[in-house]
Amino acid sequence: MRLRTMLLAAASLALAAAPASAHSKTPARAHHKAPRHHAAAAGQRGVSIVMDEVRVITFPRPVATVFLGNPIIADATMIDSYHAFLLGKTFGVTNLVALNAQNQTIVNQQITVANRGGGVVTLNKGTAQFTYSCAAGHCEASPRPGDQKTFFDDTEAAISGHQDQSIKAASVAAPH
Image (cartoon, rainbow, N blue to C red):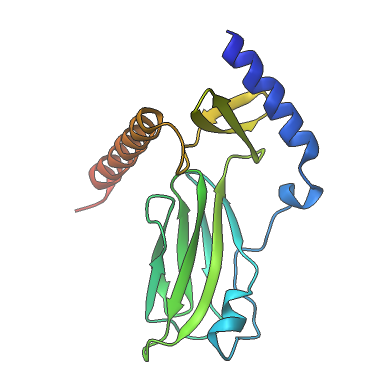
């Protein structure tokens, strides 16, 4: 019970200290003015998405390939050469790189998958670290590199199980 009280207090502080822009909706599409080189592409605004939700993102030029830095955090499925579905799979930050047919970078954006409220709390217990994403008085495990190994591994296993169940449910529901 003491840990829950500490997490709720920390979540309240984190949410109170968060800037207003952290709660605003970021458009889920790339800028229409395409960068001409990699340095400009890296400076583009990022996309925020909520776990287990999907958004359509629009590319400024045709895209042949999309890569995600960490496919555990988010997934992208191409609709056509200008559009992709972006799925928030678990809490975290990664990046999306879109390449044209000549393997030139069209987009390199940060992808942030968060809960609806958007607060992150790090609990240090001795030498062990535990990270949680918190909103509206509720915290969920959100392990980051550097967190206690068992906490990290157990949470990642639960996330993988969640994703496997989603894939199985979608395959059963899909028309054959």
